Length: 125
Image (cartoon, rainbow, N blue to C red; front, top):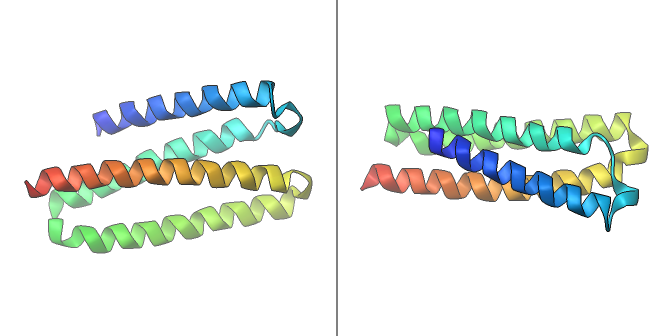
């Protein structure tokens, strides 16, 4: 888990720096103060889910696949609920929020799947 925390922290810092550069130069008219919070949201949730999955994988490899699918399903619906609540409560920033949320979702999902795949391969070997 320590390795994952370091990697996810580095990823988050890189995304934050790239976002800051883009928002202060090319996309300055699209910056909203909620966006660093969305980045923190993904960082925290990704680390919590990964810790849970590592715990399950360590206890029972046979139950891991079912738990992984279930937690992915729950996480996706939680993300959808967050998006819906934000869009309903903040319609003027909805488009910008949705684009940022989608980009961060893709980045963190790819990262999480890559890392959990490496971990599962290590367990099997």
